Amino acid sequence: MRRLEDYIAILLVVAGAFAVVSLSTCKPAEASEIPQEVKAIIGEAIGQSDKEILAHCHALRNRGTLKGVYGLNNWHKHNTPKNVARVTKLWIQSGKEADFTKGCNHWLSDYDLTHYKPKLMAWRFKADYSVKVGSTTFYRL
Image (tube, rainbow, N blue to C red; front, top):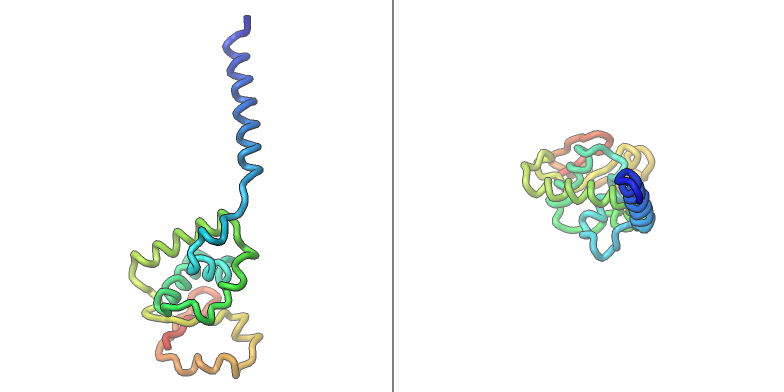
């Protein structure tokens, strides 16, 4: 007759094996399940701090359209459950709190400002307000 400890040990081994199999079958979220806005923010700002991502969320809400948002074409490179969960949380948060970008609706990263042709970014001089958050400048047009 087996002792209780033996049964517990067997149960732990089986539970551990089940956990390993379950985790090994995880895959990135299906594209159709992720809101377009979340995809766009993942593609635009996933390597940035939560505050920078939140600023992108506010600016995208202010913009009211995904037209011209490069991140929507780039998000799949960073489609992981962790990234989707993080950005989804911040997207929802941005709809519940005050907009600290004060109506900004466009943005350029420091990289953009130093590597792209000034002619392509001339619109920024028409902005009536801008704020810098981390490595990104946000503009209100």
